[in-house]
Amino acid sequence: MWRLPGARAALRVIRTAVEKLSRAEAESQRPAGAMERAVVRCVPSEPKLSLSFALADGSHKNMQRDQSEPLGRVLSRIATNALKGHAKAAAAKKSRKSRPNASGGAACSGPGPEPAVACEPVVKLYYREEAVAEDVLNVDAWQDGAVLQIGDVKYKVERNPPAFTELQLPRYIMAGFPVCPKLSLEFGDPASSLFRWYKEAKPGAAEPEVGVPSSLSPSSPSSWTETDVEERVYTPSNADIGLRLKLHCTPGDGQRFGHSRELESVCVVEAGPGTCSFDHRHLYTKKVTEDALIRTVSYNILADTYAQTEFSRTVLYPYCAPYALELDYRQNLIQKELTGYNADVICLQEVDRAVFSDSLVPALEAFGLEGVFRIKQHEGLATFYRKSKFSLLSQHDISFYEALESDPLHKELLEKLVLYPSAQEKVLQRSSVLQVSVLQSTKDSSKRICVANTHLYWHPKGGYIRLIQMAVALAHIRHVSCDLYPGIPVIFCGDFNSTPSTGMYHFVINGSIPEDHEDWASNGEEERCNMSLTHFFKLKSACGEPAYTNYVGGFHGCLDYIFIDLNALEVEQVIPLPSHEEVTTHQALPSVSHPSDHIALVCDLKWK
Image (cartoon, rainbow, N blue to C red; front, side):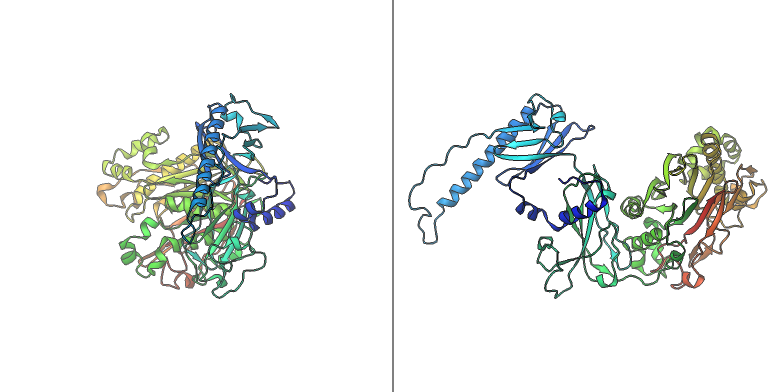
C-alpha cells in the first residue's frame, strides 16, 4: 500500500511505479524485510468482516468472520490453517523426493532423516508495536496499519483499501468515439485512481515499446504497446482499427492505492461512420460555459426497447441500416454526442434502465456529470448535471395518473375530468411520468433552479390527454418552485409530442386554454372533455419553433422543447440544429451517423 503525498507531482511518480510493475513483478522485486499484505474489509452495515492474505506455502486464504467475535478465535483459526498448509507442503516435498528417477531407481540413495513434526506457528496481531489482546472484538482489532504475524512472516493490515467492485469495457468500440469504462469503487474515488491504456501491437511487431513491462502481455512480449493516455477515457484513432485495447487501473482514495486490475476489450476497434450529424454542432460547444451560464440539453435518445423491434426495422425505420439500430452501435454515437456538448444540464427521454447505468452514467461521469433516473414502464427519464456547478438538493418525481388520483393539488382538475368518464379512463391508463430535480449552485448557495423533464403521451389523437398531463405537470412544478422553494426559476425540458399548432403548446405559452379548443375532442366526440385551464408561469421556448426536432420517414415536426421561466432566465445562445442536408443524408433519422429519430436541443441560458 502506498501513501500519497499531497503534491500532484508525486502522483505521477507513483503512477509509474504502480503501473510499470505487474503483481508478479512486485512480488519478485519485494525488498528484503518488506511485509506481505493482509486486506481487511469491514463495513458497519454488515455483520461479518473479510480477511484475505497469502500463506508462506503459496495458498491464498479468504476468511469471513463475525465482527463481534473475539480476536483470539480468528488467530487460532489462522494458526490451524497455517499448520495445515505447512503439512501439505512437507508432504508434497516428501513425495517429490521419493518419486522414481528416469532409470527406475529411487531418487534418493538411502533413507534420510524423518521430517520434524511441525508445530503450530505463533500468530499475533500488533498495533502500534503492541500486541492486541485476544478478547478485543474483530471490529476494533483489525485496524489499518496493524501488523499480523504468522510464524516468521509479517503482514501489514490494510483496512478498507480502495477497490474496484465493477470494471467493464464497452462491447463495441469505434475509432473517433470515446471509450468510457464502466466502473464502481468501494472506499475510493475515480478522480484519485490511476489509469493507463494499452493497445495490441500490430501483427509482425517484433518488440514492445521501450518501458512496457513484458508481464503486461498475456501471451507474448510483443502483444501490447503502451499509449500515452493516462486518463479514464480513451478515444481510439484510425491507427487503432483492428486492434484490441487494454486498461490497467489502480483504485485510489487520495491517500492510498488499492490492488491494480487489468481489463482487455473483447472486440477490436472498428472504423467509425465518418462525419456525424452533431460534429458541426460541437464546434459551438468546445468548452464548458462560465458560471453565469447554464448550457442545457433536451434529447429523446430513442429507447432500445423501441428501436429493436421488427416493426421499427420494417415499418418505422426501413431506411436505416440494421446494424445502426443495434444498441452497441448507437451508444457510441450517443456518448460522443452528449459529451461533446459540454453541457451543465442534460434532460433525456426514452432511456432504458440498462443504458442509464451501463452506458450513460460511466460516460457522463467521466466528463464531470452526475445523473438521476426515473423509470416509466419499459424506459424512463434521466437528468444529468455538472458536479462542478451544481449539487442535487432534492427530487420531486411523480407519475401523472397517480398524482391526479391522489394528490389534493389536482383535486379541482380531477373534479372536471370525472364529468367525462371515457376521457378519464384513457387519461388514467397512461404511464407517463414527470422528473423534477432541484439543483443548487456550488458557487452561490442562494442560486437554485428547478429542472423538470417529461415525455408526454405519444398518440397523434391524444391531444386532450397531453393537455391534462401538462396541467398536472405545471401545477406540480409550481408547488415545488413556489411552495417548497419560493421564487426559484424553472427549466422544463422534454419530448412533448406536440407541434407549435397544438393546444398543449398554446396552453404552455399563453398560460391558458379555452374549453372550446379543438384538442379537447382530439380522439372524437366520445372522449370529448371540454374544460378551461390556466397556469401560473410565464414560459418561453428557449430554442424557438424549429421546423422539426423529429424526422422519420412518415413524419417530421417540432415535438421537443426547452421551456424557460422568463422572469428569471434568458437565452444567451441557441446551438444551431443540423442542416436539412445533414439530417437527410441517409434519407431520415435514425441513421448510421445519427443515433435517434429526434434531434437534441441545445442552448445556453443565463440568470437574469
